[in-house]
Image 1 (tube, one colour):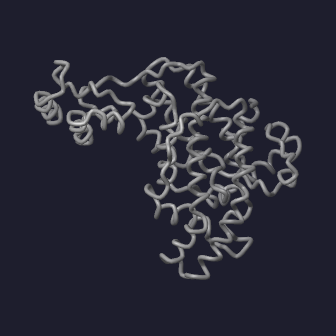
Image 2 (cartoon, helix red, strand yellow; image 1 turned 60 degrees about the vertical axis):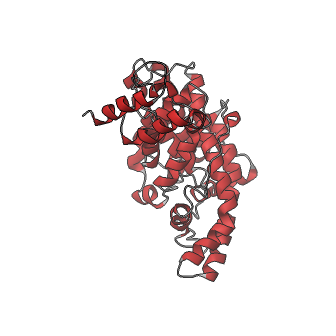
Image 3 (cartoon, one colour; image 1 turned 30 degrees about the vertical axis):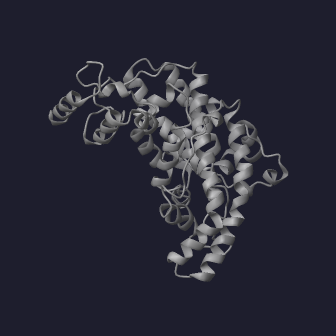
Length: 344
């Protein structure tokens, strides 16, 4: 990572053609948010607890489009197929030139830059507001990393325009995905897969080496689906899912683990600072920093089925249901909780 690369990523947007900024979209906001929520479940404490408490903010940030490119047309480069593609930014610039790299997407280096930036923010965070401010960076980092797990973000044939599969980008990553969220794309918590990357850029390119090869599978699945339903109705999407669902599920899972590991890498490199938690609010049973109607179900669960509550909200404190601070959770707490909900 160099100062020169940082300057390129922060100031080089104006040089990118508008078509490149819009043509290669993303997993869709709902897809990004789903993966990001899953990524939080892989984190160790206390980072998981802090991110879980602010999950809505991070998911929203991940669902938005951060600046700079979200793709890399890796098959433009013969060195990719030869296994000699340079990962270091300066080495890549020396070989191809900066303008060529920018034109074909610099998403891997965006992931590297945002990981470094997040680590710096964590290391320097002194207040609760500092920690809350860095959530936007964490969400943007998630977005870039997740996009590189969409094979159509790794090819110059990103919309099937070179193979007669025009429009496949949106059909695959948005239309099909939206039909299978959240039930068809479950993300399994895998804390053991949340690791510190010795080199975040090498880890990203290692995954590109795997993810790229699904491009042909997507095009083949599209061909088969169009043959059944050329008007892109339910039959088309059912067939597209039949041809891509298994590896798409794997890509979602891997994306969530990569995001968690990037966050974790930033945190470890920052020196494992303790997140400054939001103020403790009695009755905030879903740990979102406020007491409202969304706390009713978890509050009831905490009273009648503590084990189920602990399983459903592992990062939250069941003691927050003790509204009257008598070390018990009973009917007296319900009265205080209801009064707290009704308090403006």
